[in-house]
Length: 306
Image 1 (cartoon, rainbow, N blue to C red):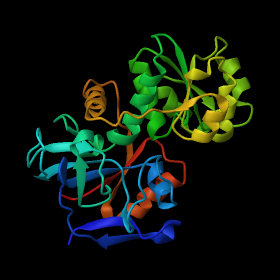
Image 2: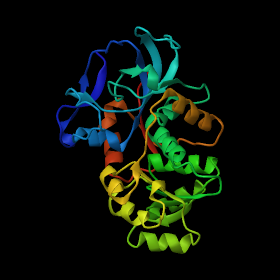
Image 3: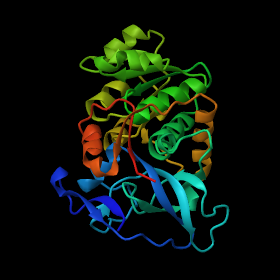
Image 4: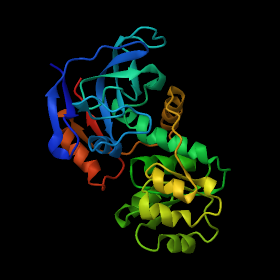
């Protein structure tokens, strides 16, 4: 029987379990995929605590963790065109990603380029796509400066690289332990902590043209003071605070076209997934703890045996 890593109710790590779970059947517009790799993201453990994106229905419990996968098409549902059994794909699953099998809606599924491994492709549908959507949303001219908070995390690493690929200067906020890493991406590193705005002003006296926040709370509030135009303030972490400050959340496109674009950036050498650790499916809980603890550098991926 295929295995999957689930949360059985809302709560902490104690509600997680590796269980046997039958293969789902693809409905119209869906494909059944044999999972080869699943990206691990902060939203995964947040969903275990009851978080849901606006407009998303409450999941049926037990629910499988995971929001981005790469794998091989096993079966296609009705009305599916452009995909066949045996195709290598990546995208956003509707039945979780920490599993041996899952369903992908073709609207948010792309063909995996041969140049990408399954592990690399599994990092793109959430973190890299969010980063791409955010940088596109800011719509800055080449040469402008963007401040990215949480620059050492999964979305931040991708956003920094994508911003650089678009010709932007990047000021990256991250812990002292990530200084060399953030600077290796081409960003000016600013350590997180008190008096953030003053330290940014000292290091970047010409100011910043936009803020892409990935931390929220006090960090977002401090970063907002650096802007006179709050239409250039976006967040992927704190909808309530950004609304109060006059900014907006990242507007996610959630399309296959965006997945194609971020994959092309990787193939062209402009975006490196930076997978720093991998775990097998039977150690999915360890993978999730690595992200939940808040100190992960780059991307964590669960690899599923073929």
